[in-house]
Length: 161
Image (cartoon, rainbow, N blue to C red):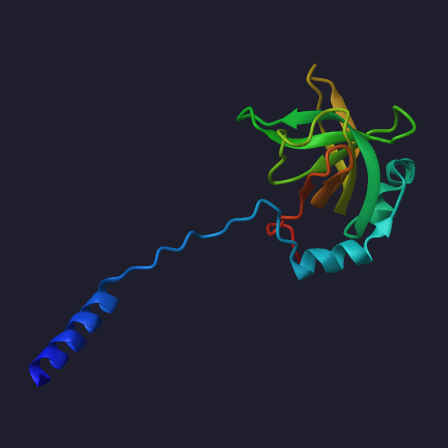
């Protein structure tokens, strides 16, 4: 009888040790907002695009926020979008240059109304598509909300202070 009980205990131990539990990892498509980005958003100075255009040097190095409409995307030499031109919601001019390490052209489209949080970079000087020289106020975006679609980009670890 002892041998039978010992054998049953061994079988139970072996069976419980051989069972496997499979877990499926959960993923989320909502960007995680870091506390650094949240703090910078809260402390950003609200400005109009017109004031930013008129006085870009007064916002150089400062965290600012504004709302505008995506006018166009600026393509880099690799063919990838590296920035966007944004205009005021209520006018076609002035235009400002919004720089970002990664511009998401899939969820953000030309004509979308967006809110930008970024750091003033003074003046951007470059050439337009026709080769003409342009000079625009420049912002390095660290967070973006597409008010048209609800898309939000808070993944700006390259620009977080």
